[in-house]
Image (cartoon, rainbow, N blue to C red; front, side, top):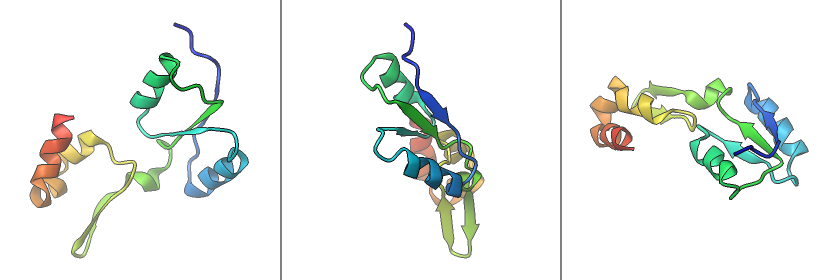
Length: 102
C-alpha cells in the first residue's frame, strides 16, 4: 500500500520544535515519538495528516538521570531504555518490568 505524501520534520531542539509547531499550528500536523502507532494509522488510512513532526532528534527529551533524590525520565526515553536502565531497575523495578512487557 502506498502512503499518501506528507511533510516530515525532525527538529533538533525544543526551540526549533516550537518554531515548527507555531508555523503548523492550524495545519493538523501530528507529533511522533517512536512512530509505530502513527505510521500504522497512516498506513491504514485512519490518520491522514499533512505532516509529521518527529521528536526523535531532540536529545533533551531523551534524558534519564538522577539529580539528588529525584529521577527524571524524559518524554523521549524508550521502553527498551527503561527496561535496561540500572537506575530504573534499582528504584522502580515494576516500571522496568512493565516496559519489558510492552
